[in-house]
Image 1: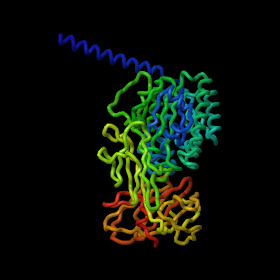
Image 2: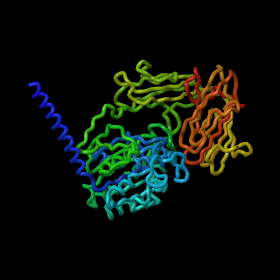
Image 3: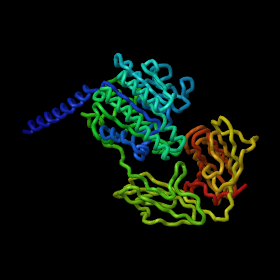
Image 4: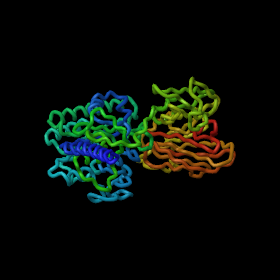
Length: 549
């Protein structure tokens, strides 16, 4: 009897395996004849959530999707478009910044399909599918240097998003290609010019929705609908007028699949990374992938596949909103006369807010928020949503600085309009275009326009009340440097998006001269400065510890 039970279990397991295997084999046999990847440069999940996007949402309902896929770091365009088509990250393909060129790089690719270029999905399709028709239509000309030209039959760089859609639609209708890659760049333009989260940015997302609808209509009219897989994604999101950093706003991207072999109205709960895009295309077309690729196909989105994992995506509630709210690069909180009101809101239907006022991380033992309250001191507030005794959101932070109405602005600045800036310029022999004074070391609120090729030198003194080691941070777009006592403490130089760099110095009690030089090469500009010590939580340097030189 015991033997019979074991035999029955074995037969059952074998049958279950056989059914699963047959379903997977059947799914693979039904692979699509056409794959179209549509990439929207700078399209963020917030864009899809806050703009009116009926076509995106219709495709998500008809297919599989996640709004929590992740870009690779740095969250810049070249690095991420390369990862999307190469099935690997910058550590493998070596494209670590937008300055990458075949004759200008630091890190060589671990393997190559042609001189200095890591093998892409274009190359794999060209080598493994006889007579494959392959097209690349890209709005941003920089995309054209990232793939093997010899692998592509149709290679076009239109000048506008409308022309890109027109050319792509004509190509799809006429050639019915095996693989088409379409790149739109206008969302990124709007993000850099107007700011992510601005009405203009959301309008650009709605334009993306229209363009997507036009491409989908051509797929249906061409007779390819039942034999096509469409993948829609992005290279990065953004914060304020830039990207390149490590925040979720910059790193999270949408990943949407539709068509042949794809489950309907399916929410992808597995982690998805930028380099999984190419791996998914290869899987759908039945291609062999190089061992150098690290991307994995998103199999659970395909009919016949259901691979359970012990570590799915962590579900996060939205973090608390602290008032005054963060706006673009400006942190929540602000500078107030005499007293500041601290108000926090839970944007979710669930959970409870817990907070601290000393810069420490909130826990379930912290104070629960009920009503607004006031402070007459410089205060760092951190808050999070807790559910069932566990933290269930990202932590929100706000910096409240309080000053006397009689306080005179302790920071002086000199502003210079220059040319072709890519790093901190020498300002010693230059005459400033403008001078002024301000309460804090920041570009926020200056009367002058921070336009392309602007440099600013800030000077003040910082009062140290207790001797010890102090860490200073500059958070800037583009570069910045900070000196204390004429010693360079922070080097955050270079042309980049909002980025934080820090450095430490031991200071005695008393006044210490401080200088910060910042420049904006182009696009959005930003600077603010933080400090901390053993006894002082990290915070925007408050005006009350500064004195004019």
